[in-house]
Each structure stands twice: as structure tokens, then as C-alpha cells.
Image 1 (cartoon, rainbow over the protein chains, first blue to last red):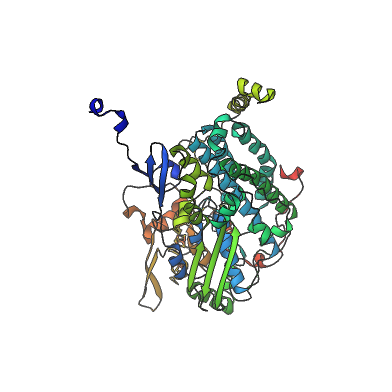
Image 2 (image 1 turned 120 degrees about the vertical axis):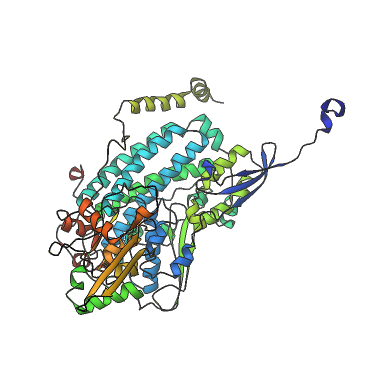
Length: 400
Length: 184
Ligand code: SF4
Ligand code: SF4
């Protein structure tokens, strides 16, 4: 057929392919439908919802105290930050504050979470792009952090550590010492990762000038976290609306210039160092004192040793567990924390009962998933992988 | 292209540096744990499979059937059926936990005023059927006998029973930073 018609009349048409939901580079179950013209992506449509568990609705059916473990499963690689965000929102709703020691410890563990989340991002992102070694190095340090989490609260990923009004249990001396050792060794490890890929020509070819997004456009898309800072916008909830102990520690907010995959990578590498600095300062400044707020609006469980000996405590214990905190003020509140992926917000509408009337989670991954088509359209199909990696989405949080 | 850049490109300096690092790391001690052969002990306070505490005096479950654990459970996977005994005492007829739906948050342990339910340190309990994970009272008591027992008891509860009076006050010996030398 070719011979009599000639190559000039060869019919070409766009090819539609399905990437995911089980593609290893889509970090969870994200499905992208790609229209391809040769190797160029003409159109990219993300389909989400494969991990939908109805966290927001479940939250409305749980009391303020029992909805906490649900937040572990939003962004399951940085559970500590989610717990902290949730507890802060409830605390602000009730108008209480955690004691200073608890604030320091929360700050410390959420920075550990940030490091562990960025480590996972670095390992998998590099693996997707083709650098396998970094993955193995990165997971060595992640294991250390997860062991520390286990020592702290008995769980490695789904920690449920922060509590409304404080934290679950105090840190042990062994934990503090081991964590300090980690912070002393970790900067050296970050240098190792950089030795492996920072100047590597393949890495540079795959990341420089790919997925560029300008500062004002990034803001318009609602990007937050390192994905926004890579474009040169210095916005960080920890700096602009400090919570817990963030106003008592010193750290910088690294920003990029161009807003490509490489700049976002550089931002996160710098954040490793900054988080490390924060942990170190938290340990050094750790004050002594209570770790739970005194139960003013009857929000925290009474001390265990009094439950069976004091009538009042016992009633309080029973009511709090079965009905939830009854002193909830009516109204609404939005409170945000800086999660490793971006701004994680919790929005509550309270009608004065023990459970929220409406709970909404502003998940950074959800917003970031929407920018994938913008980054991918017009680029090569191989860069789709780099673009998914660079916005750092976790589908558990995106689908909720 | 500067001369320096040219030299870097031709001699693959950054790749050589990376290779040198891998070579160096190759000579350090491996971090891999040969898992099924080499088991890693769970840390104290690990949240694993459930158990029901067997009372030392009566040999029965310590649980009184107050239902607080079922009330606080975020996944609602604890089922408690109580009844009146002949002498008008409350007895726990059935106490069941659907371990497959549990999220291992530890809130049930925290809520129980009698320290009657626990999470043991046992984590290897895969099976071929779903029924194996439906924990009845007998199975839960057996878990206590097999994986916990009385030796660990009080130390164990320290990790779970919170808040305590100490958490609201200024206890002695709180962990603080003791200087770089001591952190080793
Ligand atoms: S650990 Fe949590 S989810 Fe599991 S039974 Fe106890 S309260 Fe329920
Ligand atoms: S809270 Fe404790 S005593 Fe009450 S039903 Fe549960 S296990 Fe039994």
C-alpha cells in the first residue's frame, strides 16, 4: 500500500494511552490519560479518586478526639505533621494551647516527618528518572527515622502521636540522644546524595528546564510548599503564621529561581538541612514541664490514676469518650500547617456538639495534582514522569 | 564552554566522584537485615496484635464490659455483648475485635479504665482466611498468654496509659539535652 500511495500521504493520528493507575511512577494510584502526537504530550487528563475513603465524612461521624487516627492516613509518609495540623485546628477552635514542652516536641517530630517525607520523595523521584543508587542510600536514613518513631510511640508510619492539647507521651532520654546523633550525621548524608546526582549530567538533562512554571502562574494555580518555592516565591506557613515552636527556632526558607524540576529538587535538598537545624535547636532548647494542657474546657482525658478513684474524673472520662468534648464553641475555623508537600489546612464548622458539623481538609496534593496537565502538555512523554515526581503528590491525601 | 567545563565533560568527573562514593560505601558494613531469618525485636510500646488481660487472681478476663474501648475506637471494630448473670452481675458474654479493620491507633488501650485490653508486640500473624483475624474473647486471652504475660505488665502500660498525672505537672527526670558528649 505504501508503495503506490507514497509516504507523503501517510496518515498519522493522535494516540490515546492510559498511564496508571498501576504505573509505578505515579506514586500511588493516579491515572493519567495522555493524548500523544508521536512522543509529545498533546493533552493530559488526570483521574483521581482511587484511594477515596471519605475521610472528611468519617471525621464528621467521630468526636474531635477519635478522628485523630484518620489524619494519619492522609499523607501517610508524614503522619506527624497531619496529627499536628489536626490537633492545632481543634485547639484553636476550643481556644486552648499546648504547653511549651509539647510544642517543642511536636515541632521536632514534624520536622523529622518532613525529612522522612523528603527522603522518600528523593529516592523515588531519582528512581523514576533512572538513578537507582540514591534510593538505597536515602532509605538507609529513613529507616533510622522510622525506628525513632517506633521508639517514641510504638508505630512507624501511622503514629497518632499528637493529642488535642499536647502529645501522647513524653520523649525518653534514649530517644533524644539518638535523635541528636542523627542530626549530627545527617548533613553528611545529604552531601552524599548530592555527590551522587547533583552534578550528574543525566540528572541535569532530565531535570533542567523541564516542567517550568513561573512565579505568578504558580501562585495562581494555588501551589504551596517546595513546589511553589521552587518558582521563587518565599511562602512558608512556618514563617508567615508560626505555630507551635516555629517562632522560637531559626531557619531559612530556601527558594529557587527558574521554577523547573531541578530548582524544586534543590529546594527540597536545602530543606533537609533546614529541618535538621530545627530539630537540633528543638533538642537543645527543650524545656521541662507538662506535656498536656490542663483540661480547662474538658478536652483532654483526666489523668489515668484518678479515673478509678475520683468520681468527677470518672464521669468526665466516660462522657468525653462517648460523647466527645461538649464545650465546643459554635463557629468555624481554618487552620493551616506547613506539611512536607505544602499547606495542609483543616477547616471545621462546629455546631456546639462533640463532633464537627463539617470537616474539610485542604490537601496540598489535591491542588498539586491539578497542575500536572499544565506541566506535561507540550513536553515529551518521558518528562511526564519527572513532572509527577516533582510536584510530590501522595494520592492518599489527594483523594482523602 | 570554558576549559574547566571541557575537562569536566571529557573526564566525567562528577560520575567518577559518584562511583568513588559507591565504592567507599561498598566497603562499609551493610545495613540490610535478612528479615525472616533475622528478626528485629519490636520496641517497647509497639502497637501490634490485640490481647485481653487475664486477671491474676481469677484467671478470667479483667474486662468489665463498660464499652469505652468500643466507643472510642475510630474504626468501630470492637463488639461487646454483655448480659446479667443470675446474681445480677454484669458479665461479658462476647468480646470480639475484627483485627482486619483495626487501624492500630492504641486508643482502646488509652480509654480502658481497667487496663484490660492491650496491644501486644506480636506482628507476624498473616493467614489465608479472614476468619483467623476475627478475634474472639478466647483468642484474645490466648494472645495475652502467648505474647505478653505478667512480667512485662506494668512497664508495658506506662507506654500506653496516658495522660498520667505527670503529664500535667513537672515530673522528675524528664528527658532533656545533656550536651553533645552525652548524646553519644
Ligand atoms: S487499636 Fe484503635 S482501631 Fe484498633 S481496636 Fe483499638 S481503638 Fe479500635
Ligand atoms: S474499656 Fe476496658 S473494661 Fe471497658 S469494655 Fe473495653 S476492655 Fe472492657
